[in-house]
Image (cartoon, rainbow, N blue to C red; front, side, top):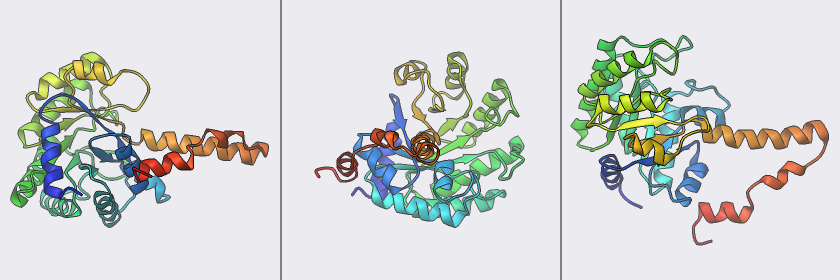
Amino acid sequence: MPSAAEKRAQFRRMHESSCFVIPNFWDVGSARMLQGLGFQALGSSSAGFAWTQGQMDNDVTLEGKLAHLAAVCAATDLPVNADFENGFADAPEDVAVNVRRALDAGVAGLSIEDMIRGPERALYDVDMAVARIRAARAAIDAEGSGAVLVARAEGILVGRMDVHQALDRLVALADAGADCLFAPGLKTPEDIAAAVRAVTPKPLSVLMMTPGGTVAQLADLGVRRISVGGSLARAAWGGFLAAAREIADDGTFAKLGAGASGGEIARLLKPGT
């Protein structure tokens, strides 16, 4: 098992050139299977994990998130990037404390959102968003960990910003010390290319939540990393619900035949079996 320092060094190198996919797990088993499929880094999904706990996205506590991250980091050889929501705090100094705790859990990188935790989905003003990223940057640097800091601008995703406003926010967050920039909700090739130009030379991460586009096409636009958020978890729940509904509604079991075999699962969880 590589050390946390080795995972962080590998993860930082991955952001320096080319384009890679960082699929999102929701528990230890899904993380181990993604490793078995040959991916080189993994991302957590706040929504995916919350659903495994019978909760909604953003309802998981800091302690629950840290325990989840520590368990997965200990179970996989790959670098793990934490979807660390808003840092589980508002004040920059409290974000810094929580970032240090995430580093203690073993993450190779973590993302901090500019969205206030709560059902209103409000955004911090730009000065506060910048101060929070600066605090996270200082916490990482103080540890000397080399972990990758990702700044997320949520304005497009929650319908509170247009693309131009979101790109201005990304530039401000890049200047505040983020290593990688992320504006979930960018969709068109033109908008993605504009975001790449805005944050260059720093890497841009893109979220793919629906069918369309390819890794090669995104790489040609200059994207460095691609995640899928809670989409893999939704796909898994979709198969589960379809099979369970058939049993509940029809009393038949045909959809169980579409499941992965026990042998395939074993091979992915424990290569060589």
